[in-house]
Image 1 (spheres, rainbow, N blue to C red):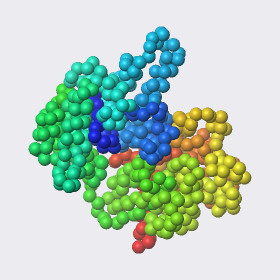
Image 2 (image 1 turned 180 degrees about the vertical axis):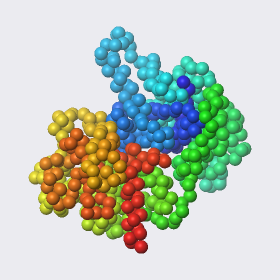
Image 3 (image 1 turned 120 degrees about the vertical axis):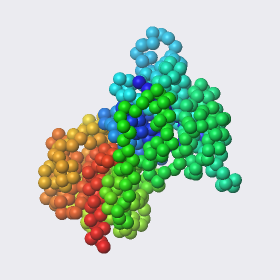
Length: 530
C-alpha cells in the first residue's frame, strides 16, 4: 500500500479535494486503483445538521453517511462510489473512543489524545489496505488550526511508522497577488511550510494555488526556503474547468514525480482519452438558461453536485452550452426572471423559508410548458402545487410546513415520528425504485429498476395517488410498491420530479439521464422560442 497525505496552508477553501482528486485521476490513468479519504477536524459527528452557509452541500454516500462535498469531487473524478469509510470527522473519532471508554474497553486506563485518538485516526488511514493500490488522505482545515492537531499528529506518526517509499506528503498553499506591488508573494507559503515542519511533517511536494503564472525564480525561492526540489514546486493556476486540472498537473510532471517518489512505475500505458473528452470544443454558440430556484441562491456550494451534474451534461452534448442561474425562491421578481429561462430546476432543502416561491416556480413551469426537474423537496413542492391547483385542495401542504393542514399530501413516516436525534436518522443512501413503463422516467433511464441515493424525512402521502392520476399527475416510480419516488405530467414536454438525489450519480463521460434529459428538453424549448 502507498499513501499520499494532502494538507493545506495559508487559507481554507484552496481546493485540496480537487487537487487530491486530480492527482488520483492521474494515478488511475497510469493503471492504479486509487481511493480517497476525507478527515474533517470539526466536532460535529457529520455535517448533516449543519447549515449550508457553514459547510455547503451535504453529500450522501451509497451506504447513507452524510459527508463533506469533497466526496462528490472524489466520486466524479475517480468514477468511484464512496461509503462511510471515506469520511471521518473529529466528532466521529472522539465519539468512537468515548463509547469504548464507556464500555470499559480501556481497562481503567486514562484515555488521552495520544495514543487513543491518534491510534483511532491511524486505523482509519488504513481502511482501504488490500483493496486499492494507493490511498489519498485529505486532512481538512488549514495547518495551524488547533482542532486539526490530532490529525496532523496522527499523520506524523503514520509517516514515521512506514517506509519512506510508501508514504508522501503534499502541501497545498496560496500565493497571493498584491495589487499595489503588482507581484506574487511567496512569504505565506514559506510560513505555512515552516508551520508544517514544526509539527514534524516535511512536505515532499508543494502545490501553489495562484491566479497568475509562477516564474522559475519564484519556484526556486520556494524550493530554497521550504527545502523541496524545484521540480516539486508546482503551479496550480485557476482553470476554466476543474476537470482541466489533472492535465495541467500532468504537464508539470506531477504524476511522474509522485510515481518516482513512491518507487512505482505505470502499470499501463498512460491514457489521455479523459483529457480529450473534458476539453472537447463546442460546435455551437447556442446557450440554454437553466434556473435553479432555492433559498441559498447566493451560496453556489449549497448546490455543488447539481451544478456539476449540469456541467457534465453540457460537456456530453457538443451542440449546446448551459448557463446556470441561481435564483432565490424569495425573490420578489421571481416570475419575471423565470420568463428568461429555458428550463427550471427546484433542488432539495429543508424548512419553511422559501417554500411558496418554489411552489410558484413549479406552477409557472407547469402552466407554461417550461422543462422542469424537481429534486427531493422539489418533488414535494410539485405534489403540493398539484394538490392545490389541479385537485383544488387549497390548503394542501406538507406537515413539515403546516402541521395542521387538512390535506397532508406530504407527511412524515410513522417510524420517523419517534426519532429524537436529527443527525443520521433520515432515509439516507441507496434505495431501489421500480419504474412504471410507458413513462418519461422509463424513457430516460431505459430501465424499470433503478438505485438512487436519498436524504429526506418526509414522503408523498400515497392515499392521494389515485386522485392525482385523474388530473394527469402520475406517480411513475415506487419504492417497494408503496412509497412514491417519481412524479411526472405526461401532457407536458418535460416535467418530472424525484424524491431522491440524482445529482450524486453524475460523472464526466457518464452524465445522469435526468440532467441530460433536462438539458435536451431545454434545447428543444429554445428552438421553439426561436
